[in-house]
Image (cartoon, rainbow, N blue to C red; front, side, top):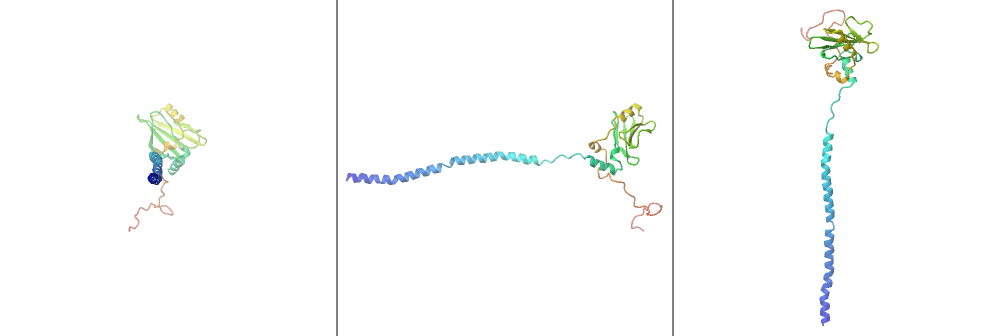
Length: 213
């Protein structure tokens, strides 16, 4: 009888033990993914730290490049629009003299002329044209920078030594130096042809207003 009671008491324990083991395995399975969640947080924080760098790169790419200085071709086109041959453009440098922008003009057919002034009233004139320095006018100093071209310098209240110094310093200007000296492309246009002259023969210009009687 006592043996049967002990067997009856042991039976519930055998039935409960598998349930306990199953519950323990379930707890272990639940606790397993937690390290992976921590790893996910590390990846998220890494992506967040990379975001400022991406924003900085985007900000850097949005900067516009600085405007470039006009090239030789563009400046030559401006000179031709004024009637000046680009190859005949020369400048010089003399201490105490400043280039007068309003003096820039055409010399002869397609030559170049410019004047420099000083505070004491002295004026230095530079003329560049096609020709040679053989027949240099009196009171002028001439230089032939290349074959077929001549640069003449003449001064008002300027001594011969200053003229020679200016002649020795003549050179071709760079495109950047021409930018502030020449008119803008809008105003540097070819001469306008008169349309009010008679088509045949000679006569006075027709200044009447169209449509008037």
